[in-house]
Image (tube, rainbow, N blue to C red):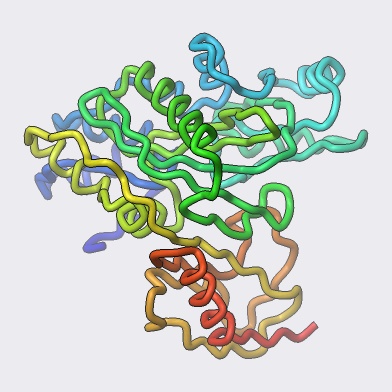
Length: 347
């Protein structure tokens, strides 16, 4: 980046003052739910295309998303909204366990509480993670996890990929594998649900990222009008599908006539996240950079750091994005990565 604006993303006036003199052709964000609403305000202030507040709300507010999906007849887990501890208790009593409690307006699994057995609920912590002071109490589905990444052009949505996500613990991702090995009927259903929701949203352009759970039935968990994190939209989707969503976004903002994208390819890729043992980092030997077919490598720890409990993606220690033609090829590269990173921990 050529410029770092030292301000909270919610301080819209600060951003407008910083960028207005640059006369930007457009302003975009790719990976952050929280930034979607401020971004629209910035674009409107600069005279650029922007999503309406009502459109943003059904992508950012998880309970509005639930109501919108239900109105469309799309499958989502039973959900209730709560703005007080008493309302959380009432929802738990009515729905039974297991449940997940999550802020209506957060992302990256931040602020999620998983209730599988009866016990105390940290109400203050749950509400503190929401700018709107509200949480969604949702039935927890046990099953396989999938994601769909897509592209919205002139009000029509195109689902580009299907990936399978595996977790090392609830809310803590281990890896995301593209292209998911599933029956064609399941792939088509995930794409159908995603397309139906986005097409009915009133949005006319953008990049999307949608999450599903499957236990024999397919449930849409969340969808966002922004790209997936950790290189998903920038590195993975263009390779896997052969379609670069950013090029379409740029063309849209330039006012160019855009043809529908071609039929997506189904190449392989994996986003692999790493967790090292608890303790103080004593030594790091890192030779991953430059490894063929590793499109992205980030190590978020350094010597002297104290590593503790990992509760969500933000707490993990490293990530590799590996591209290939087949999953076997990707797995072979991941074995090379494992040999080229050595972190010594003092326990």
